Image (cartoon, rainbow, N blue to C red; front, top):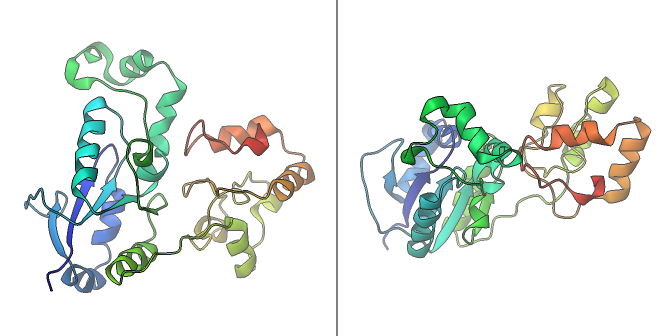
Length: 250
């Protein structure tokens, strides 16, 4: 039986999530041995238009990017969005809060009007095409990535947590960083990272995106308990998935 053909593509991103794959070290040998990697610019010069699984890192920021990702989708049986830029739009989506001409002038100065520097509103991959599976985070968690890939290879549907980071914090016995005076997005952010940031006494800043059905009452209780100014909280929430805050804070 032939191995599944896998292609990895990048759009607007730092490629840090692909670096996490490379950082699997010895484990990557077993993983790569189970598939046929036919395209991966960061690690190989091979190119192919034939693949079964497409893994995409990065957000969609130009019209030509939309056409390219649609073409990739048309060729892939399964499409996986890799990392925050692909799953939510990531920090790139901060651009959407400003006039695009102002953004271009701020970044490119006198060259802002050149055609090859054109830009558009930033989109997550699933705002353009159908995404089958998401690997969240900035950067991704290596263990979660291998779990998703192995599940796909076994014909199983990977189960991504749909509960908040606070659950993982409590299971670890962490001191709540709200008690330390930090504005933490743990009550509304999707778990699966092992509460990595709060475990080191640093607030969750929402890189895994917001859970689909946040516990409204619990979230409001936290806000009221610590006398939080809602606008201050919203300022923290725009770093990832800008302009997509849960309506409980609206």
